[in-house]
Amino acid sequence: MPTLIPRRFKAGGRFRPALSVSTLLLIAMAVLLWASPVLAQEAGAAGDSVPGWLSILPPVIAIALALLTRRVIPSLAAGIWVGAWFANELSLYGIWAGLLDVFDTWVLQALAPPDGSTGHMSIILFTMMIGGMVGIIYRNGGALAIVEKLTNWANNRRRGEMASAGVGTAIFFDDYASLLVTGNAVRPMTDRLRISREKLAYYVDTSSAPIATLALVTTWIGFQVGLIGDATSGLEGYDKSAYGTFLGAIPYMFYPILAFIFMWMLAGTSRDFGPMARAQQYALEHGPQDARGGDQESEEGLEAKEGIAHRAINAWLPVAVLLGVTIIALFVTGEGDSVGDIIGSADSFSALLWGSLLSVLVAGILSVGQGLLSLGETVEAWLAGIRSVLTVLIILTLAWALSSVTEELDAAAFLAELLGEAIPTWILPALLFVLAAATAFATGTSWGTMGILLPLAIPLTWAILGNDGMANESGMMILHASVASVLAGAVWGDHTSPISDTTVLAAATSHCGVAEHANTQLPYGLVVGGIAIVLGLLPVGFGAPWWVGMILSIAALFGVVYGIGRPVDEVRKSGA
Image (tube, rainbow, N blue to C red; front, side, top):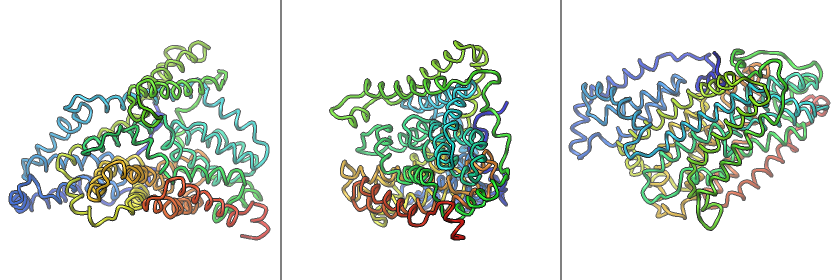
């Protein structure tokens, strides 16, 4: 039975590495085993279990394998194995013992930490419940009803583009739900209005991951908060909650925010430039080109049950309950004199669990009560939604395990000692954005990039701040900006990469060629990403408030739209 999210961490299935993960890993381990006597002697002389530089090798191996193979899950597992080997001993026996420890120690501790905390399992349960709720509201026709209402409003090209952006924005709680529904739902409308398939694919792609990473309650939130919580739990002197840290990072997520604003600027003005303008001109004169890219089977699983009424309330009410209950619970469980203090001290895990549970119950009651789905069909839809996020849960668990083994090897201390004085504080946000963007672009996955880099970036940032005497409230702006930079950079790489699964699926559901979609979208991503770095992250690094960078960046986007962009009629007349 197909799932709602069949291939989140695959890069379209079109690229095959020259060497397999196992071959590359065996070569690397053979080299390390050959050198193990020297390494062990070096570690013993320094009084350590392993040399300091080896402590960063597990995440480096995970990153390198992900870049070479474009397969994040086995790459993360390989990194854990190497780390577990180092945590045992540098010997042949250590390799075998490390392999066994991957699951019976590190993965097990990721799910059931020795300290008895339930945060990781809370995130897993929340993610499962959100996936289940998504499955129900698509099966009962509620999500499709919202799409139909938006598309009926469009009667000209500008409204057609705004409706395309609006449909994706409305389905904010999951990037793949947005990808798979938006293109299929609005494509007949955009074809009728002679809007190019490339422009539709841009709206489909831009209204998915960039929005899902920002919204307070999405299938992304558990993953991101879980990684942040795991990375901050061992920081000396850091007492902020994971959810509070995430909320503090949102204003510094320049790329997702600016990409969202830029999308609406283009939709509201019907202006374009570069390859997109030429695609729009061709569509106006000759009609949209039909080019199917990607795997069409991935569209299955999001169809409403046949023969039932489509009512928007069946989608927006469960989502409203999810948002409302979560926000109320945050205030109920938190305390303090300001909204930030209250939310920062709140029991975010309980709030998310309460909200997700009640949203599923409401979605089920609406479906069964109106006779849209039987109880059995509702349960099946819920289970299909849960199955759709299993890959998410696997990579999240492996990321937790890699973080734990890296912490056990004290990699953060080594990095702080090595780089603490070499990297100036002001460049950290911009540097982390570029690193995350490059990794995600090469691997085609934002989640894998977040899972690999956040456990390293957060302790490193805190250590560098400590060297400058800023590991306190005075350095929170840099820490928040650094967290945001990893999240935003990962989104940029996934958004623009031609091998990204989101790129492939956006093209597929829009019936646009993958190469055409990537080529027309990349210039927009480069413009927004460049502005985010130069006018957003660099000023923040020098101490400017986030809103100053945001104002400058938005002004620059307006300048691009009206200075470079042209309506399609003007493009045709000028021959641009």
